[in-house]
Length: 472
Image (cartoon, rainbow, N blue to C red; front, side):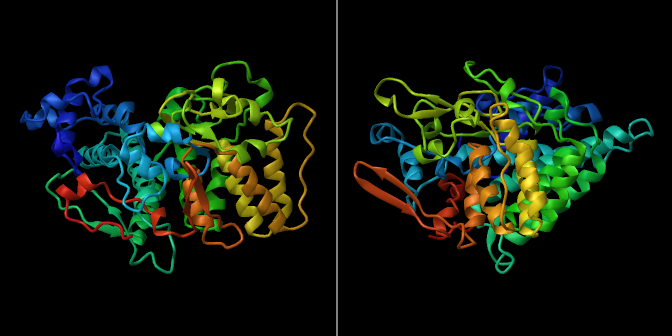
């Protein structure tokens, strides 16, 4: 099975062959379900898609394209483990929790990322060989836009884990991730620079915007397949991580012009086991991350200071969290995932609440205090009990920015965004924080801008690929 751990694995090609045979069954072939086919040499005709329907089916394979995006949530500060719970984890997760400098990363996160890239590249290559008819042109364009979106989304998520945060002063030399741009598995993997990676992500997404439909994401299909709103939302997220606030504003605004629906939390059933539904009305694009056992909601305790930061009439406190029982009666677990699940998967897709916060932050950074606070109040008003919310005010743009960042922390929990936020905000001394974990009386610390904000490339990958490891 060791051949599945390289950037492009032989397994990925076999998975394509199997998915080709199962197009009518939505090409469901998971990472762990195809082991027995690893040594089968497929007929090339069975490996490659050849029609627009084939290409769409590959991208609609949710088992591959919709799940297991890597995120830094296990390393972030939204939760903590007791020593007893931590001690039951395997070494890779124990080390990761305390930011051990030598902590390895589960290989499947890397493999799953490049599985998506491979599928996207295979679709793009196939589309290049298809000359669409007039009737097929719109479908051809939509599929190409979606493939570009999926590739850029995968590259971006990986860059948040295995590369330094974007810094215009050093991005030309900082190492990032391999940019696989073709489905050729014999192509050598080389790490691009951070600048090259973000340039590629932006190029792909800007082209995707011109190809994807403007259909509003109001159904399961339009939330699972990216449209223009999703491309603009992802561009806003990418630019925000780059601290390019004017461009982040532009795309958050364009996204919200297309789709700006918010959930009134007063309409949710607080007594439901999972109050927030999958594909809910705020979701623009649905995707989930591959969480770790340390984020198991029955093990991970919500940070106590974070929980206490919600006021009594803020419904997020009862919607997002559930009180634990037994010996953990005074602690809370997270149940507010936009994936509508309580499991090892966490929503890392795109939603309107994030876009309101991006636009509000960009307004504040541009000195537009009034518009920043208006956007913030528009969002937070939907989170409070009816007639209990008093609109926030701000004395300055800096005051508005501070309040927006506080609400961003409280709103966008367990989506993989906190890790990226820590990385970018650590560049500003006003908002930089040191993270701490305490286990059995021992305190572990992650100071701002530490090299451990870049995780190590999995050791199993480096056994198969010749590329430099991230420094420590």
